[in-house]
Length: 137
Image (cartoon, rainbow, N blue to C red):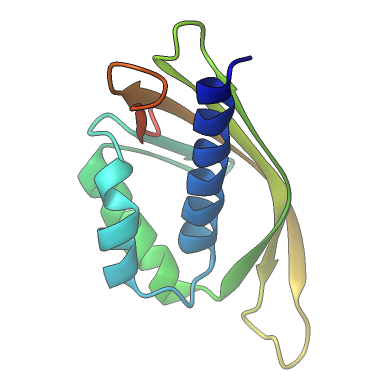
């Protein structure tokens, strides 16, 4: 692995760490999501969890804003890994951690073990210039 590829992976790991904190810490205002997360969300995004599935950037935007208004969560990241596809046109980030439900934090915090998978595309002509544009599906 060359220096440019290592730097790209390190930058992507930092980006996905920041995105995860912004998306799963409900103290983050929706305005911050609009500014720091939405520019990197593809039009064809698909969000899936055991209870719901949503497609499209606008649905994702509304769902994230609603999530931040309805619940009280934060996220502890234990592991984060980025794997690039051959040719560096995209890849996958996996985040392993715990979402802490704090609806009744005065009484208890409910930890939810969570593994997030972000499939992403990259734009740019070289590994040194590439930037994430995704998650994909």
